[in-house]
Length: 115
Image 1 (cartoon, rainbow, N blue to C red):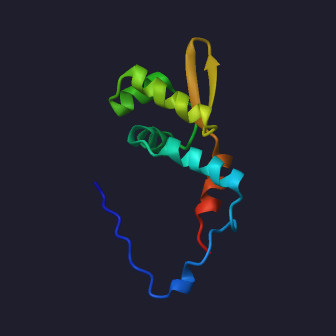
Image 2: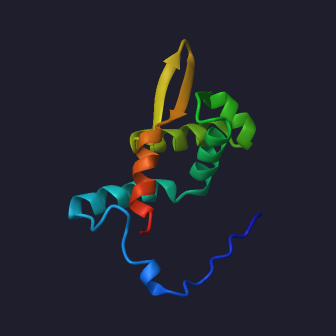
Image 3: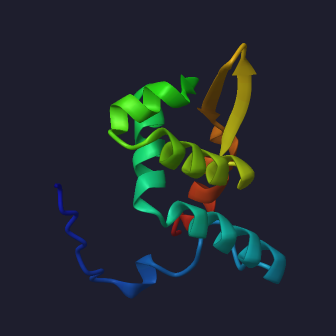
């Protein structure tokens, strides 16, 4: 496991605001809900698997094999990610496919980016 080392800021003026400016109540509520969905280790592992594959479409079975989790567990977490709008879900015959919705992650990056 890699441990990220966070260095203290020597100049506090370097961390003055979020990249998108102050959030409205509605924006804060929306982003808090998205981050809550992401605050689950299995979901982050799923997203990392999707990202490692170029964010392209992946079946539930493929993710189950890669992650070593049960199919119901993977399906549950994929459902939560899809309901939050972070993933796109579609069927190809009897196979359920998921892919990342990059536009929402770009929005989250903007919210977190510090000026």
